[in-house]
Image 1 (spheres, rainbow, N blue to C red):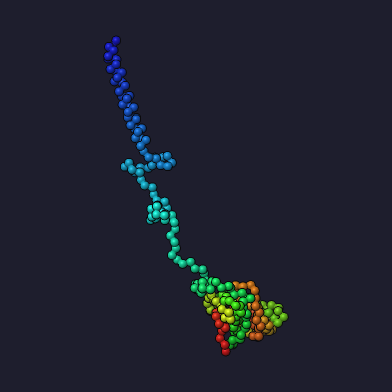
Image 2 (cartoon, one colour; image 1 turned 30 degrees about the vertical axis):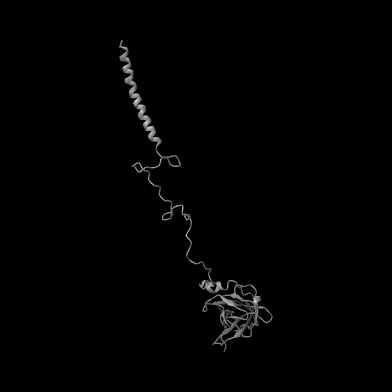
Amino acid sequence: MAPHHARSARRTASVRPALATLAVAAALLAAGCGQSSSPSGSVSPSDGAGSSRPADPSPGTKGESAAGDGAAGSAAPSSAPATAPSPEGEGTTGPSRQAAGFPWCSPGALSVALREMEPAAGNRYAALVFTNTSNEPCRTSGWPGLQLTSDAGRTIPTDTERDRSVRSRPLTLKPDDRAWSRLHWTVVPGTGDPADGACPEPGALRVIPPDERGQLTADWKLGTVCGAGEIEATALRTGEGPRH
């Protein structure tokens, strides 16, 4: 049997490696607890040098100022003026803005009349004149609507065509101011007219002001209308048109 002090030495020697192993494990555990975690609980990615890589900026945030100046996330104000489109997309917004406080020229604010203009071979012309008969300014723009009728009020086939030789512009008519449209038609029978060449002779012209539904009536003393009732009308312009 080995002496008692020899057995104690062997037990001491066997315990030391176990203690060393426990110390190493404790050190590793302490090191693991020192790592940072992302909000989801996973360890942040490392670039291999012990430092975490910064997260990529979110789309659309490059070049913005840092948070804290009160402007982060707000859109920059536009420098382009906001203007409403003008009639027919002509781009003349100045006059329409100046007249924005006036009502639109309704049939109740207008009177209408026809005046014969210088004819040409087979062609006839007339000035269709609107007058502001109200007590305040009104505004208008564009082309009138037309309908020929007989003396008895029966409708006659009418085809109103927009003559775009005159540019459509916003107009402001003060009381007693006038705006006019040139009408053009033919007195030569053609396709769509009666076979005997007897084109209709209207007794009146119903007129709808631009962008309105109500109508006015003007006496028609300008003779026959051929061409299947086609009448070309220019956009309104100020004045009452040329005279002979």
